[in-house]
Image 1: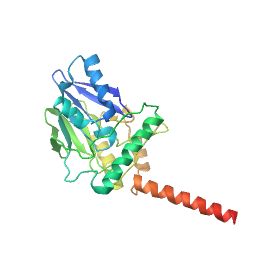
Image 2: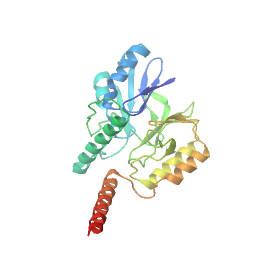
Image 3: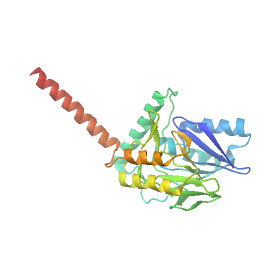
Length: 257
């Protein structure tokens, strides 16, 4: 078993390779299709159809955006967390989907990535839905763990023999320091997920926007100390921004008066 790390549109892509099959530890961005196609043909010297499973850890553009396209092209199975409702549901969901795509494009601009079409279906239609601690069909040396908080359906995936675990956006890095992601919709569950990760005692942690690191007890303590106690979402951030602008404008008017 080999884990290849590819430079994606705005995230790391973790591709698991076996002699007879491959698995993606996340659904990537739609802009990553060409990168994957080239890597299979030029580096691995094998057909893209050897991709048999794509995990979707959650529904954000850089984690779910290419899943349906990859299934259409390769016939691979999409694996996700078992949930009754779609993440992007109703009118609010449509707005959130557009917002998340816009944020992903903004991040890409900051990273000086070329402009790409990253539109994708906001509703995931997985082939396999897994609950906590279940094994990935066809890749039974990998086990999923529910680690919600960033959203309500985040998955982490551990390679049992090596105890290397992919946690997607559970942990990110800002100004060279590990920290919680933004948004965090469910702060209590987020803290529980961090503690769950520590209790699993992984050998190393693979993170979509950081890479692979060996985390220490101090790292977990620092992350828990930074974990929000109230929801931090795009909607709440926008409301705070509007309120701050209104306060500054009102202060300016009072000063002029």
